[in-house]
Length: 217
Image (tube, rainbow, N blue to C red):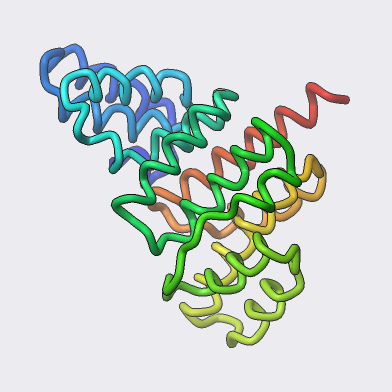
């Protein structure tokens, strides 16, 4: 975790491997290693560890939202859809879950299909989640931007609004297949992202979009 806080992905990955070697039968270590590997950009290996954890503790499946993110990065979009749908049963007010489900449906089926399958997520108090959910339902990206700009520059509320707002504007553009625009927003989100779980995911997502852009050039 210290390595991740310092931005040292290589050391984080190495340490996760050492943890697994030291405690190969410990399901909790497999779960922790999956988290570290996802945050360090090793999504395929993260899925391996999450699935190993679930073999021993299958009742934990509804709580494993991070597995859905890892599945997206490994192009298992249908698996991501299922993971985010089951997660809603234990976390019904999470707009982030609805957004990732939207993205996976768009990639597994189509953007139009995703627009008709937005998961309800009422009452998420974080800025600007109300507007993000509205965007998923209506396509109104400007509402997210306007909500960000209502907050005073340099305040914690503005920082939160920028991080989540830019992140989900990027995700929404990705769902439409607009990779250049998605990368622009995701880079803005990742630029000053906090050193926490979703901050690391933003940096991984920006790298993912950048690599996809290069492959398609």
